[in-house]
Amino acid sequence: MKERISCGMLIKQINDSMRKQVNNHLRSCDLTMAQVGVLLELRKNTDQQMTLKELERSFRVAQSTAAGLVSRLEQKNFVESFGDSKDKRIKIVRITKKGEQFFQEADEHRKQTEEQLLSELTETEQEILLSLLKKVRDSLH
Image (cartoon, rainbow, N blue to C red):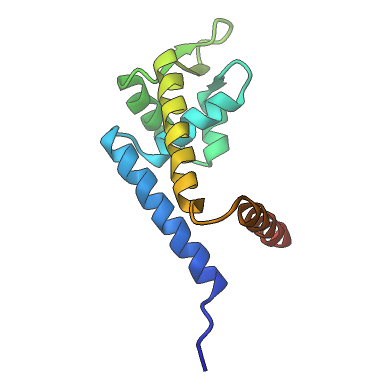
Protein backbone atom coordinates (compact mmCIF):
# COMPACT_ATOMS: atom_id res chain seq x y z
CA MET A 1 0.00 0.00 0.00
CA LYS A 2 1.27 3.48 -0.90
CA GLU A 3 2.18 5.59 2.12
CA ARG A 4 0.29 8.87 2.32
CA ILE A 5 2.42 12.02 2.59
CA SER A 6 1.63 14.11 5.65
CA CYS A 7 -0.12 17.40 4.89
CA GLY A 8 1.82 19.07 7.70
CA MET A 9 5.10 17.84 6.24
CA LEU A 10 4.24 19.22 2.80
CA ILE A 11 3.31 22.60 4.26
CA LYS A 12 6.57 22.64 6.23
CA GLN A 13 8.62 21.76 3.13
CA ILE A 14 6.95 24.54 1.12
CA ASN A 15 7.49 27.00 3.98
CA ASP A 16 11.14 25.97 4.35
CA SER A 17 11.76 26.38 0.63
CA MET A 18 10.13 29.81 0.49
CA ARG A 19 11.94 30.92 3.66
CA LYS A 20 15.27 29.81 2.15
CA GLN A 21 14.63 31.84 -1.01
CA VAL A 22 13.64 34.91 1.00
CA ASN A 23 16.63 34.57 3.33
CA ASN A 24 19.01 34.24 0.38
CA HIS A 25 17.58 37.44 -1.09
CA LEU A 26 17.79 39.24 2.26
CA ARG A 27 21.34 38.01 2.84
CA SER A 28 22.36 39.61 -0.46
CA CYS A 29 20.92 42.87 0.93
CA ASP A 30 22.61 42.34 4.34
CA LEU A 31 19.25 42.18 6.14
CA THR A 32 17.48 39.75 8.45
CA MET A 33 13.84 38.68 8.64
CA ALA A 34 13.55 40.53 11.96
CA GLN A 35 14.75 43.78 10.36
CA VAL A 36 12.25 43.40 7.52
CA GLY A 37 9.62 42.73 10.18
CA VAL A 38 10.38 46.14 11.70
CA LEU A 39 9.92 47.80 8.30
CA LEU A 40 6.64 45.95 7.81
CA GLU A 41 5.40 46.97 11.26
CA LEU A 42 6.29 50.62 10.61
CA ARG A 43 4.49 50.55 7.24
CA LYS A 44 1.29 49.32 8.93
CA ASN A 45 0.92 52.68 10.67
CA THR A 46 -0.55 55.56 8.69
CA ASP A 47 2.34 57.85 9.59
CA GLN A 48 4.86 54.99 9.14
CA GLN A 49 6.32 55.50 12.59
CA MET A 50 6.15 53.96 16.06
CA THR A 51 7.79 54.43 19.40
CA LEU A 52 10.58 52.06 20.35
CA LYS A 53 8.34 50.84 23.20
CA GLU A 54 5.57 49.96 20.69
CA LEU A 55 8.08 47.97 18.62
CA GLU A 56 9.20 46.11 21.76
CA ARG A 57 5.60 45.16 22.54
CA SER A 58 4.78 44.26 18.96
CA PHE A 59 7.75 41.88 18.66
CA ARG A 60 7.66 40.80 22.32
CA VAL A 61 11.37 41.52 22.72
CA ALA A 62 13.53 43.32 25.25
CA GLN A 63 14.32 47.00 24.82
CA SER A 64 17.93 46.18 23.95
CA THR A 65 16.85 43.81 21.16
CA ALA A 66 14.46 46.36 19.64
CA ALA A 67 17.10 49.08 19.94
CA GLY A 68 19.65 46.83 18.19
CA LEU A 69 17.27 46.14 15.29
CA VAL A 70 16.57 49.85 14.91
CA SER A 71 20.26 50.73 15.16
CA ARG A 72 21.20 48.33 12.34
CA LEU A 73 18.38 49.68 10.18
CA GLU A 74 19.54 53.24 10.90
CA GLN A 75 23.06 52.32 9.74
CA LYS A 76 21.52 51.24 6.42
CA ASN A 77 19.43 54.45 6.31
CA PHE A 78 16.19 52.43 6.21
CA VAL A 79 14.82 54.08 9.36
CA GLU A 80 15.48 57.19 11.40
CA SER A 81 14.87 57.72 15.09
CA PHE A 82 14.41 60.83 17.16
CA GLY A 83 13.15 61.95 20.53
CA ASP A 84 9.51 62.92 20.99
CA SER A 85 9.12 66.71 21.05
CA LYS A 86 6.98 66.51 24.22
CA ASP A 87 8.90 63.79 26.07
CA LYS A 88 12.57 63.22 25.20
CA ARG A 89 12.50 59.85 26.98
CA ILE A 90 10.32 58.52 24.16
CA LYS A 91 12.19 57.41 21.05
CA ILE A 92 10.24 57.50 17.78
CA VAL A 93 11.27 55.31 14.84
CA ARG A 94 10.20 56.18 11.30
CA ILE A 95 10.79 54.45 7.96
CA THR A 96 12.81 56.50 5.45
CA LYS A 97 12.34 56.83 1.69
CA LYS A 98 15.21 54.37 1.22
CA GLY A 99 13.52 51.94 3.62
CA GLU A 100 10.23 52.30 1.77
CA GLN A 101 11.97 51.75 -1.57
CA PHE A 102 13.67 48.60 -0.27
CA PHE A 103 10.37 47.34 1.08
CA GLN A 104 8.72 47.81 -2.33
CA GLU A 105 11.56 45.86 -3.98
CA ALA A 106 11.35 43.10 -1.35
CA ASP A 107 7.59 42.87 -1.83
CA GLU A 108 8.10 42.51 -5.59
CA HIS A 109 10.58 39.69 -4.90
CA ARG A 110 8.00 38.04 -2.62
CA LYS A 111 5.39 38.23 -5.38
CA GLN A 112 7.80 36.67 -7.89
CA THR A 113 8.60 33.86 -5.45
CA GLU A 114 4.89 33.22 -4.95
CA GLU A 115 4.27 33.25 -8.71
CA GLN A 116 7.06 30.71 -9.15
CA LEU A 117 5.52 28.57 -6.41
CA LEU A 118 2.14 28.55 -8.15
CA SER A 119 3.35 28.50 -11.76
CA GLU A 120 2.40 24.85 -12.33
CA LEU A 121 -1.20 25.44 -11.24
CA THR A 122 -4.05 26.77 -13.34
CA GLU A 123 -5.90 29.89 -12.18
CA THR A 124 -8.74 27.69 -10.91
CA GLU A 125 -6.33 25.40 -9.05
CA GLN A 126 -4.67 28.44 -7.45
CA GLU A 127 -8.05 29.71 -6.24
CA ILE A 128 -8.95 26.28 -4.86
CA LEU A 129 -5.57 25.96 -3.11
CA LEU A 130 -5.91 29.39 -1.54
CA SER A 131 -9.44 28.61 -0.39
CA LEU A 132 -8.37 25.30 1.15
CA LEU A 133 -5.33 26.84 2.88
CA LYS A 134 -7.54 29.54 4.40
CA LYS A 135 -9.97 26.89 5.59
CA VAL A 136 -7.15 24.92 7.25
CA ARG A 137 -5.73 28.10 8.82
CA ASP A 138 -9.13 29.16 10.14
CA SER A 139 -9.71 25.74 11.69
CA LEU A 140 -6.62 26.30 13.85
CA HIS A 141 -8.00 29.45 15.48
